[in-house]
Amino acid sequence: MSAHAYILYDAVPEQLIDSALRHRDTVTGAELIAFDNCPFSGEIRETSSGVTQIEYAWPHSPNLRHALDDWFTHNGIHFTVVM
Image 1 (tube, rainbow, N blue to C red):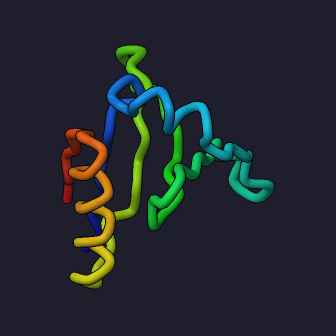
Image 2 (image 1 turned 30 degrees about the vertical axis):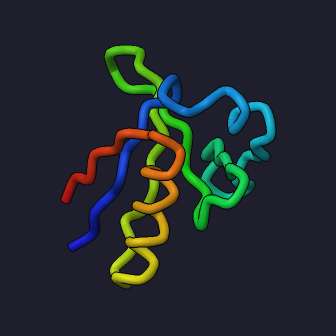
């Protein structure tokens, strides 16, 4: 079973948006974004209702899960995990 964490693009603090690195995956065409000190890159997606969100694969490893969770919490970003 795989899970994903979702955050709203608008919930990311402006200073993180300003310093983020973006690129398009050459294989899938996905728009990816990497934030300072975040352990993973996320994929920028627009929902059918027009909301822009960032999707992260939710790691199987507890240590990696905690690292991503801690980064969200440290930056005051609310997130949802969907299995």
